[in-house]
Image (cartoon, rainbow, N blue to C red; front, top):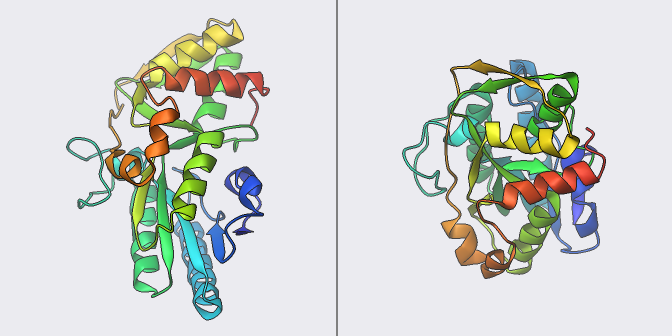
Length: 248
């Protein structure tokens, strides 16, 4: 696998660099779920176009990472599925969906993975868990009432990606998630307990609860059943993050 990018996702994929020849993983582009500009989005679209063109010329498959977060599935009725139309809930979700369509229309061999909130060492400063950890340490956390998020650890994302590529899955879109969305307040409480801190909570009434369907994932990668995805999974992911230093 050739990896395009140098950030959190690209670094997380490095253990697969010696596997899956003929695969190009596009792990670069805009990762901010808010605050990005049209210029930022256009830059990522141009990068995808260039990488797809090169993959087509070289006969390679392009592995593209999209989102399964609230920006895409936040307005879905029931668990967000890959095979049903979705109405993006944010400009970021609309952008990622547009990139998916751009890739499908390009004619290149591809696989699209829609990622839940990826958690692991060296996460970006603006990502959910590093942001919450900073707020807990600062003594005050802004909570969106009713919000829930599906977390997935880096190691499990790697295992799933490895299995999907080994199985030859192509021309498809797959949610990569635990299938369990934890209330953000529970996530904060667990982080605070692990860090032995008691932050103040400031509530905002704009939270979004949602769920991600993992039915297709389980069908394509039966091994997912052994990864321990359950309602307590997010706690183990957070424990691993704290044990690794808990820093962005």
